[in-house]
Amino acid sequence: RREVAAKSRDDATALDATAAPFDLPVVELREDPTCANDTVTVLSLYGGTLTSLAQIKHIDCFVNLTSLCVHGCKLSRMDVDPALRACRSTLIELNLSSNRIARVEGFPVMLELRLLDLTNNALVTLAGIDEGAPLLTSLQVARNSIKTLHALGVPRHDAKDWALEHLDLRANH
Figure 1 (cartoon, rainbow, N blue to C red):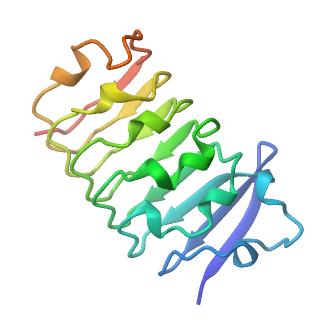
Figure 2: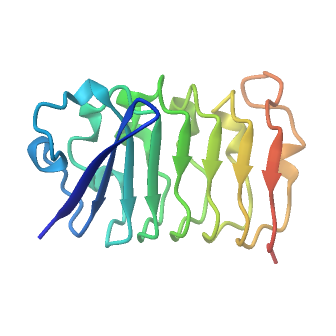
Figure 3: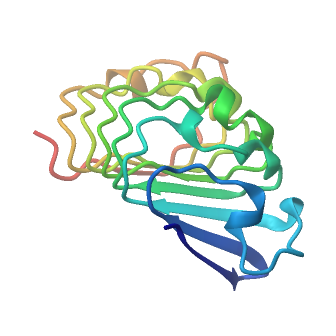
């Protein structure tokens, strides 16, 4: 049985879904079936057996998504492309914390991303961070196994200046 809750936060429609599998048919996501897909801006998925963002069915319907949280699942990859291609010009916050992600990838499609939370994953390097997300201002990678910041010391792949203002590296070993 799927538990869903829809609520409003800062004039944004927020959806929380917990249960496996993460098959998100449009009608089962809402307490209010009149809520149009283009009004959904925040989607949060906590816990469960999700191993890939591609498992989130119908996520491409949410073209105005500004925040996605997939916390405490079993993601082993950051397969944001093509899964999040539909919201690449609106997604500002991506929280993939407490998963099993070992490398940063899929960034070229994240044009507006400003906050990336990869806290408590399996990262050992930030290689790939320079390939996209030109507006990224906050990178949270605490509680990983990062041993080098070389990727942040080289010019970005697109030759743009780094926008990064906040880097959380606590408890890396």
